[in-house]
Length: 282
Picture (tube, one colour):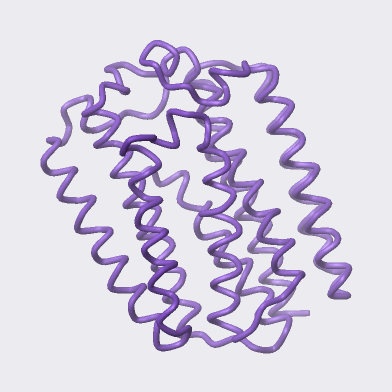
C-alpha cells in the first residue's frame, strides 16, 4: 500500500474540505466518500504499479527503495493482481455513490481516474516510464481531487480552490521526484525513462525547489483572495519544511532518501491539516 505516500491523496481531499468550510457549504457525506475514494484509488494505483513493474521486469531484488513485495517473493503476482482489481472495484462502488450528489457526468471522471490507475504503470505508453509521472500526479492528486471534492461538498466551483489544487498537485509531484531521484540508477538499468533519468539529478533538485516556490505562491494568492490571512501559516510551515527537505535531498543518495519521501508527503499533509484547522476554528 506504500503507507508513507498515502498522505498525498488525503491532503487533496482535506484541502477541499477546508475551502468548503470557509465558504460555509460543507456537506459531510460526499466529503467523506471522496476521502474514501481517493485513498482506495491511490492504493489501487500502488498495487497496479507493484504488479506491472514486476511483470515488465522494471523492478529488481535489492532495490534502493522500500521493499517490493512481488519482486522479493513476499506475495505472488496473481494475488497482487487480484488485490488491484478488488481495490479498484471497491473504489468504483464508492465513486458510483457520488453520482447522487454530482450527477451522471461523474461516471466519465471515474472512468478517467480508473484508466489513470493502470495507465501510470502499463498499457502501450506507461506514463511512469516515459517521463509523464509528475504531470500525472499534478492532475490526479491535485487538480482533479481538490476541485471535485469541493464541488461535491459545496455544490459549486471556486477560483481559489483551483489555485490551491494546482499547488497541492505540485506538492504531490515532489513526492514522485524524490522517489525517482532515489531510483535513478535502478530505473536507468531497466529502461525506465523517468524525468530524472532523462534530465539528471541536478535538474530534478531544481524542479523540486521550483515546485515548492510556485506552490507556496499559488496558495498565498488563494488565501489572500479569500481574505483568510490566518491560513498563511500553512504557507510558512510548508516553505520551512520544503526548504529543509530540499537541503537534505541534494546531500543524500539511495536508501538515505527514503525518509525524505515520507517527509515530502507529510509536508503537504501538514498544509492541508493547517488549512482545515484554520477553516474550522477561526
